Length: 330
Ligand SMILES: [Zn+2]
Image (cartoon, rainbow, N blue to C red; front, side):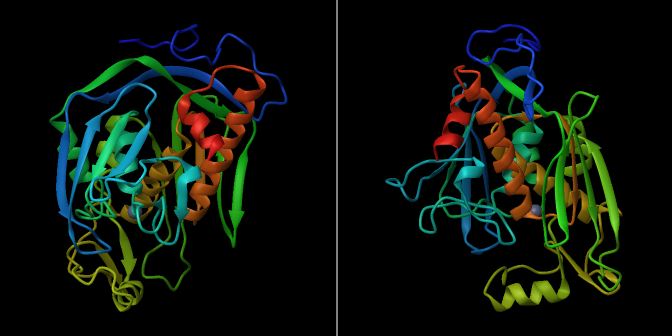
């Protein structure tokens, strides 16, 4: 147990919170909290959204400073893949880590779950190329983990903030991370697919803490328009799925389904965003605001924040967290 160690000198992590940030630093450490891991293995089985194949995931406790690491048990000789932005290889429609043959795709909902519940160290053993799709939300992961205690570890995890906005934009979409006078992470998403989209314009804002993650975000499902669903089916993706399995929007709303929240799509975009930003490998304190952003921009922001944090930590000539080292080296 290391308690709330914000502002204290602490063994196990070399970042020194006692040193005042220099004015020029674009990012700074605002505090620390205890790293956490599961007390025991948690197993989840299901069908992959992309492949339609049965897959089993085992979430295993991991030592302090391990971070989140994927291990393909069906590829025993393949290297483990740390869940870091530098290991992202594809962001089309979903986030993929590692190589085409040995990687893992559609990782964002599982990563959001671990981040949302503040599980920092975990080895994810998986016997296929994607985690179970479940109902397109994180609710099944949260339910599986609910029966397992989460334990605090002796090492601490840095919480980084920005001293000015860090923004990435492309093609009319944008995501920015902004300073805030309030501690913790706030996330806002503005979903706007235009007046002709069957999905209406909507916004959602949440203070990201475990209770809010479970109550407001985790149960919000993947969504597509009817035209998108047909396009994916034509590519051989999700042919085993029916509109009842996830949210498919026709002109009159969800087909053969009902939304769990009026703004469920915007909430799901926050879920995706949290999964992608978990690829920073550290906690964030501030306000992340996104307009129409998807995995590509989310991961770009994670890469930028990880690089800024690595540069600041390096300039301080301090021992950095192994996760940050890996992000910098890859
Ligand atoms: Zn998603």
